[in-house]
Length: 321
Image 1 (cartoon, rainbow, N blue to C red):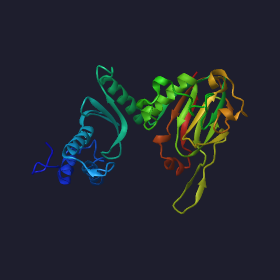
Image 2 (tube, rainbow, N blue to C red):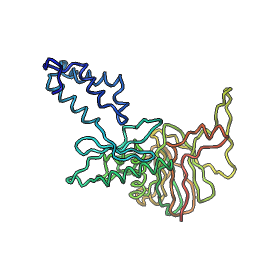
Image 3 (cartoon, one colour):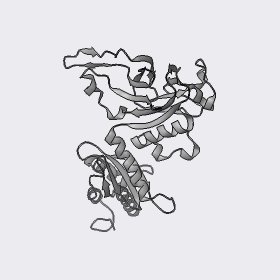
């Protein structure tokens, strides 16, 4: 039993020793001195009921935290680590700088009942690793006519979702969480397949969309300049063959684009019909066909490009056939 030397209750010192005893590379950020103190306070005192916890409650809570953070390594890739916890729960984490592992990525229970297997864990980890090795998320989308609408986001007719309505069997699934690269790419593919919608997750920014000929589109910063060490702003010239189509203010941190023929599966969108979109879209005419989307936004350091006088290409959309 987890109790002090008198056997009556857990001391805060014992709790902290127990928490620190399981600290390793998988939970180092969770069990620094500050978080250990926070966990210890939670274990000792029930703030909701305004009372100290009983010995049994403290033991149970402490064991729960230990179970949630116990790990053993299963496999390590160039950018990803698979680890195993208790109760056949597996974790996929992205490597950060140094030895840091980002915790909020993906966890998967495997069991015969659920049908999830260890092979599934490996498959998803390999997708993660490929994305982070190559430095972009990717999917394909069809433009049947080449008449494209661009906006921060579109609404569907039912007005119930700002990225088009996600199918019921896919709602709230962790592998569609845009908080990590796997979910972002899965969402890109799902929206392309179900709605013919091009989707790229960006950030709290403003973007400009350019067309280069009729077979290439790029999305990049709306402010192509950098500040040097002396505090001067240097504007970066736009290449002469880049045709500006419009700008998007990313109030919702994304840009969406869709062929006119695909909007609401064929119901054309009049550009003055405000009911169907958050901000008024703008248009571009390109060659019809299958287009490949590469989104590098979350893998780029804009300053590296800006200081060389180059514009960082966040998203590249290129016609394949």
